[in-house]
Image (tube, rainbow, N blue to C red; front, side, top):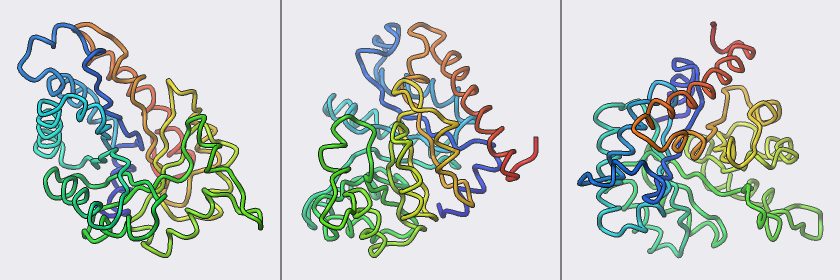
Length: 278
């Protein structure tokens, strides 16, 4: 999927919502635990209820790895289900990989060949040769960690060098030598609102994946005020607020209600910018 196709989807669906499938076996409704594949059944319910409200899904790989073989099977079944029933969705493997070149090549094979994701989140700490194996796949994306929403982001990402350039700015500047805005996005946490202007100064044309809306305290309006670009340029993720809106047999309906609230807010923002009509 190209950047233009993603923007077309955003305008058509009147949404730039990404639903994070951080599916925790300890939090899903109890009635699903007796099924053969509980995580997949949970995901299936969430996906069917929210697919018209969002343009992307983002499974957090740790939640699947933690279950061993059954978790990997649930992830595989989830990806295949989305591909078969909702082929317009942009699929992100939230894996946060990044290792020496030959290891990164294996990670790229995993998520782009075995699982057919559109994008994978990658840590830039080990530099260019740890990222380029992911960039060898046509029409696939790297989503590079730039400025995350956790407290520990300040430990490294906000530190300055001797000319005043912060680490996240160095990542944004240097990584644009590796790939264009048609193949690279950046993760910027919604709670880092005060830095969005600096991010957009460095990366005006790139899509940003924005986690942290909802349960983590990020504000959609503030994010959009500073981070939208000429083609929207945002995928705003919500996970817990949608996934765990209810813990009973109506979990999917409750998830849909939460997703619709976010989508309606996004629709208004898109209309204000003149990208869609209401």
